[in-house]
Image (cartoon, protein in one colour):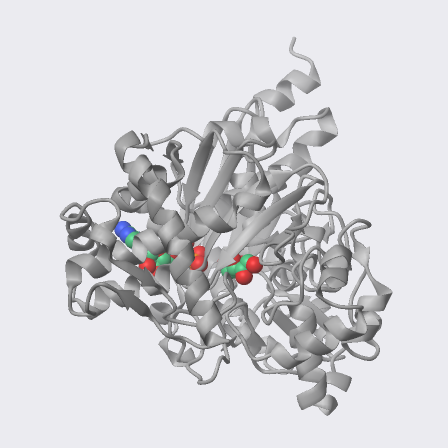
Length: 536
Ligand code: ADP
Ligand code: XUL
């Protein structure tokens, strides 16, 4: 007769990963058949915000506004959560067997809840929709998100009070950045003091969704907490000094930071009654989409770089201990595995590529075909792709620069935007350490092989794409799996990520192209430096 442990190992187990990103909400359900390494993606589903919820009026997931303002109504995310669970239920996914739920969220975005929220979350009526019951729990109707660039003054004030840029970086892992939640909270306190005073809890997107699922406020983890300029990066706990430099009584509006690889709560009665989850289903603290992608891509030791080509472009790598960017442009975040990650973030990612595509009336296919018509280095034609303000390098005003071509030259423009993005990532990630052995690409634009080939040629290393381009949702699901299976003995994140690293393709660098890109990136750096100097 088989013993109980063997029996458990041969059963099927299910885990849910959710990613609330800038433009869409994605769910991935993992099915484990026997041993933890025998896992597959059972279902993968996304809801696109603009097209599904036109009544919210978002464009690319953000409310239209001028002058660097980027907000999203949190009720949009609530609607997407209930609709995606409904869709899974209707499809016959065994929600009653989901053992744990992990969440990933676009980083830095914050949700402001009033004193009624906690009671409301705990007493939801399962016969009614979620969003309709939460109309009145907010002390701020819209959430500033990572694309908001309105807090330069608050960044300066916080940095001055903490002893300058380098001191903030050493304390929190990053200098003060406009999109980071601390400066955003300070601006809210300064511009809407009454609403700030009425705020009982501040959540990140990644802690808001688990709070809905748990029916109570859930803590922030060190992966996303590091994106606030409020957490001591070494101790992975709130820094009182940083809280005090940001806004009064801030400590009372935040729960203590909770490590990601843990259980935060059980699922609330609302979700068991309405969607059929088991009362034993566990909710983990959420994490940021980039830390979640780190896990989804299996980057749990050094030597490999992840590049996410989503709404933002990000480049990241695992770090065993804190080592901050001497130039101050990049960040150190907590990794959900308990270690750290280094990351460079670009605002002009997919939306810049889309701006070129749309302007010239191209499909992604014709965009890719055009890339094949120009040589590496674009015959010296260079673009600085500041369609929006930029994070790396810090550019406060949009303004695309073209050198050696006009904005009507479609062939030059298509190659120039991609080469600019890749050259900038290459140059600004040099501080992270030696050349990686490979790059793992993810995000919407990683479906585009021609773009990835330029990445391989610029970096001079192979670029791999795994089966899903939703590595953040996958990472969230793997985190849920890890929290459950580690009870039966240590199982590494690496083992859990491995089944999903099967790749539809690997693109090797063309050595001749790589050679010409070595000169190109130096030329690009000069254009960038000159432009920044001229801006003053
Ligand atoms: P996020 O998670 O930030 O919401 P995604 O990772 O889902 O974003 O990526 C969405 C983006 O992917 C879209 O804005 C689109 O520009 C881009 N995209 C999708 N398919 C392609 C393609 N074949 N080539 C280039 N870009 C693409
Ligand atoms: C990370 C960042 C973006 C968002 C949205 O610092 O601002 O990557 O997480 O994806």
